[in-house]
Amino acid sequence: MIITKPGIYEMDAAEYHADPCPDGSLSSTGARALVTDCPAMFRYKQFNSPRSRAFDIGTAGHLMVLEPHLFDERVVVVRGKTADGKASPGYQTADAKKQRDTAYEMGKVPLLEVEAEKVRLMREALWSDPVAKLAFKDGRAEQSMFWQDDESGVWCRTRPDFVPASGNYLVDYKTAASANPDDFARAMLNCGYHQQAAWYLDGYHAVTGKMPDAFWFIVQMKEPPFLVSVCKIDQASIEVGRTLNRYARGVFAWCNGRDEWPGYQPRVDEPARVCSVSLPPYAFKQYADGMEVGAFEPPVTVKEHA
Image (cartoon, rainbow, N blue to C red):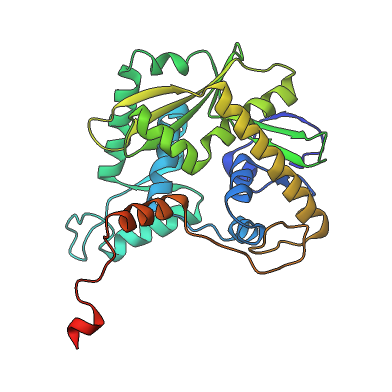
């Protein structure tokens, strides 16, 4: 499928991530990368994204929660055996590694048996949460949306985890070490989730004409007891993300139009130059506090040592 018109399209995740826009398009993940790193690194990761166990478990978790009818079709449970036919945990045997590699070649997700069971338990815990279970009712999961930004001319894409039939809110499911809302607030800054929320909301508005009232992150622990929190992003944070997304689209338009992807320099549209760097503000505060109490005075002077 080749995308030349804005709209909502039915396609699998692999086709979406392959980017069906002829001139290239920008996703929320790409926009966040262009804000936090240089274009050269963004470009490299476009074509060199290594798989990881965490990625596989996250993908399987999304399937189990959002598209459980596809779980058995897209996930391969690896049950490795030794040369004499005995069960072997993990990927210690050649048999287990072969099952894993075959799954990758088939475009499927390999999971160890213990990991598959964990994903099932996570789903049970999520659907037992009185608030979270309501977020995934009466709607559509994993729809691909494409639109062209009016200001920059950049083609953009997004794939919300879940959109209710009302379109009043959008949902994204995250697995994390902690589901504590305070921990997620810190992760929101570090991972750019405020950008993601703004990107999804604006994308949905661009293709449907309707702006949802809210964006919810359903956050779940990856380890027992698989606790869940529902985090609604406040409007002020979304506005910060929206500004950063506008900047990212401008950088992408500049780089993509010239096929130039600069490394670390202050701005992509300026000549490369030496970058001035400084200690972070907290380091100067620590230094000032230490100087005030003499913390950096050496215990032995040169004269005393002599």
